[in-house]
Length: 420
Image 1 (spheres, rainbow, N blue to C red):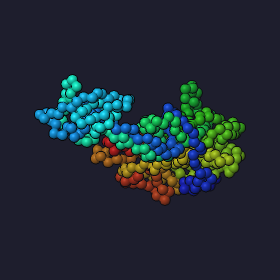
Image 2 (image 1 turned 120 degrees about the vertical axis):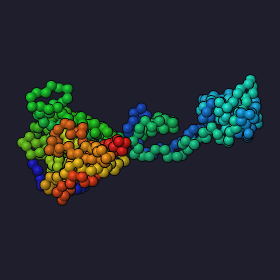
Image 3 (image 1 turned 45 degrees about the vertical axis):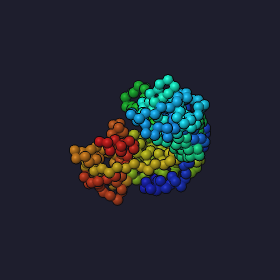
Image 4 (image 1 turned 180 degrees about the vertical axis):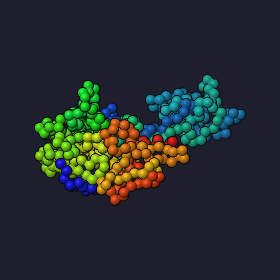
């Protein structure tokens, strides 16, 4: 079943009209659970980091004026008052022509304004011989020089990496407010599809889409819920979709959306709630059969069964929705200029997306080599595709040797090409 095919712009407008993705809530989690979560508030420091002036070297805390002119030939002798260690408040006051031994990270005692490195000193009993002068503030990290009290350290929408978690720990924060992860149901369909790990019978294939889509959802900050493989039978599909809609925030299916007798998903979706199916077929290649429904405020994206087509449609329609629902700041698409390795043709009357692999030729130019879109079900396409080239429906072809923009599936591809 296809209603009249609409353009990709019309499909995006229909989705935007019927569903406005936004974060689904907030929660507090411990730092041990915060990796890759998204901050739901800005973080301001409640203290200076470091909280006190500290030594950056092992050596002797001194008044810099006492070391003026000191060198190998003109040494200065200072009275040793004691030692200052990390983790304790100094009880020594550095008077004129006096010093105290200090270790890296220990607080600077009162009266001292610099530290002479251990290598430029000789200790003789209760006297320290100084063989190098220092300037005021030398070898000292001032309180608040790393992070100042009241300073905004992390912005709302930041994805927490190990580095940000380290900063939070340095501020004494043990729990942090993050956006809740949207739960995303993943359903594969088809009598021929078998879960990985099980035996294949004749005519069967392993389910590629569920693991691939689940990993992509998780990468975007969502929580994938694998609902298993559902047969192309109306009652089973209705039951599975109802359960998914009741328990998760977004539903993704793959397969069952073309024009064959077992492609029942559009009909089932239209009876599950309002407004029902809002997109049923888009004038694009690959991915024409894509169906989008909104069921009582929850989006359902029914993707083609072919893995490459499913991944492309996910990139175009689903990715922005999950990104916003997880609270992440929407990042602009990463594109790179490349030269086409051969002539590329548009599918008549349809927006065409040509998946390509990128290489550098012997002259250092980045070249785009098409991965045959006629084989959208080929497994190797997923591994070979670095990105895609968009050919507008008004454009008949792109000539070989023409400079084009390639939209990348993964930003890391850009950096690896720049290093080559």
